[in-house]
Length: 56
Image (cartoon, rainbow, N blue to C red; front, side, top):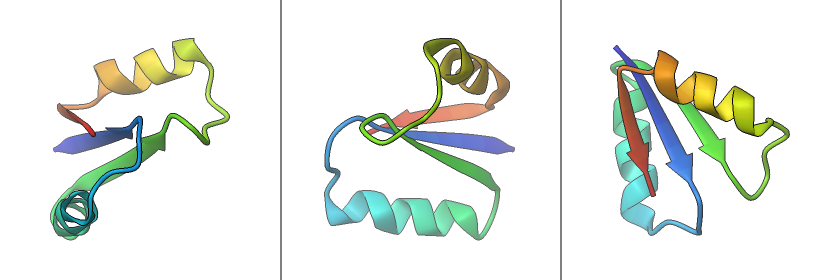
């Protein structure tokens, strides 16, 4: 299962704990919208290729 985490603002510590827990079990990718070199189209492709998307 591919899980995509999208961070738009500074998340609380619990977000990083959940991200670490997912990393041990699944294919996980993180996109930080403040510091990404991705285009809008690339982000949309990542969203549609993921099985689950979690936004923070």
